[in-house]
Image 1: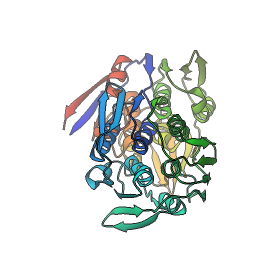
Image 2: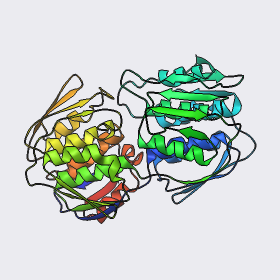
Image 3: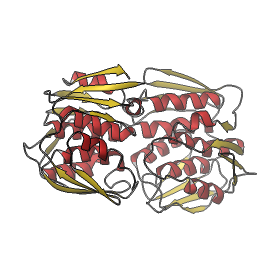
Image 4: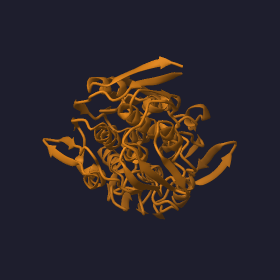
Length: 420
């Protein structure tokens, strides 16, 4: 196991190119199970999660060649309907193989998922949607066991207690493309990653409209063919680097990012006092010497993303004044609070609210990464802090940020890996 060691308060500047989206790549990789034809995916980030999904596809019977950021996936001798616990339990995103396997084979056995410890994330919406399409489902020994004599289109409401579910929308959309008749998903997730998956499925011959809106319409087809497709850029990585620039007061230019997907963050940073400029697809941020505290509440897209809640908290921890951060998507996603407090932050939790009393200085300390986005927040804090920060359990960051160390070093950071 490795730790990340950061020497803080070093001047940062330069340009950083955003990688392909992890949250798009995982369901799109799973969608290749729907076809016997070859698929070529470009701009796939090389991450622990995408490498794990590649292993899952191999275990399910696919031939996978992952070279650079290009992924070639083809069929061998038929699909295996069982997605094993040892792989699925390590990453929640792998649960999206359930819909494609069921649609393609008529039966599937998929382990209940694992992933980051950020609160309760049930799979009830996934099962509700698949049952509406005609699947019979049982839970046996930690596995979802499902079969069908033929999926049929249906009208499905996918709203949950905390809003729409991206992964459930993905699973139902992938199952419905091979169902007979028309499926309408109401209260579908609107995230750009859902839109990206819909675009990929359409490139394979699916008939989907409305993806990226709360109402998705799918007209089932008999089969899908292979396709070549390029994954969209990662909006969460882009947001992380924008927040890093703000927290360290650094002139950093972010390239290969979709500005329109970051509007809610831009709005909050302008309230903070920053000036954001976009030119030729590049995003520049000019940060005030003394920013204003800003309160945010997370919501499903296009609201403020839960996936940048921790990184935004790191910025507010360095902003004198009081801000309130509320997570309505994952109300228990606050394991980074005690770690930031170890660095001198003054944050307390009240229910699903974090009350942040900002301070102008943080100090390096040994801290523990609890999940992917919490680890990004600790990296931001470490770069802005005085002294040396050691972030233990560095593997979390490798799940969602491609070559983060190298990107930061290119900007002038002094960061290294050491064995625990």
